[in-house]
Length: 348
Image: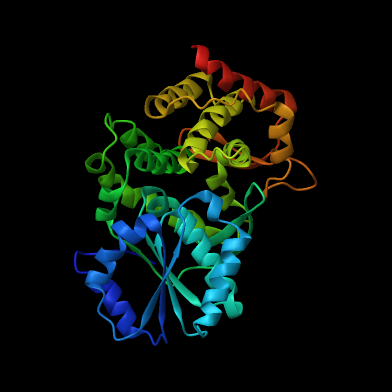
């Protein structure tokens, strides 16, 4: 269940009063510790004792070492199975916190309070938790629903522009795979700012929630949410491996362009539709230089994608603006051509 918080967080306080938790553990990074935790604590009304668990910010921290440290801290602080973990942060915090909570003592309850646009519209919703393995994105994780998701849109005021733009990529993706009207409304935003984006957040959250409710364990339609992520995750992983991490939304934007072109090459969408998609994504996102990445290195990561079966790369590709197909296998030539197409955009 997703709840939009009012300014005094009364819905969160009601939730805490109605449940019988033994203790609260609030997971933050140094950014949410500084900008968001004071707001949460200033409105928290509970007799329960609580502890703050802080990790460094960044995708690089979403690994087994950090998870192990958090498990050890929970153990040292004698967290029992009636404890509550509150994940206050962006996608790394909700992914990591959910994974740690869902595995500690075979599972303790957790809630997500997303603080970034990306986590509000996407990462905190759907019950996917996880950590990266080496440089492979989200390779280890669980399907585990949070007890609740509490969204406080004013947290967006703490974000730098790049983080806001990163989250907007997932909103565009939601429109492309499921709701043409949502896409059309989003591309009418000429300046990416909080005022322009906030009216559309609920629609994106509803799209994600609706897809998840139909297919929690990603056996069929939930796979459409992976549009732009097959190639996008591969590029994100290579950047992480090189020690030059990029924001998730930057990788998704690159993925939207290359996979929209791939959808056209496979005859799933028209050239006109692919151009509309690509030109609009380019309006919001700068070119991402992938010239240092060889096709064979990208393919090595594509072959490890979690959606694959029998060593066959399964894509989720557009069948129109607002519709998407999944478990689609492309020719290797078209995949290479879509990467070449993206590389050549720098010279256009």
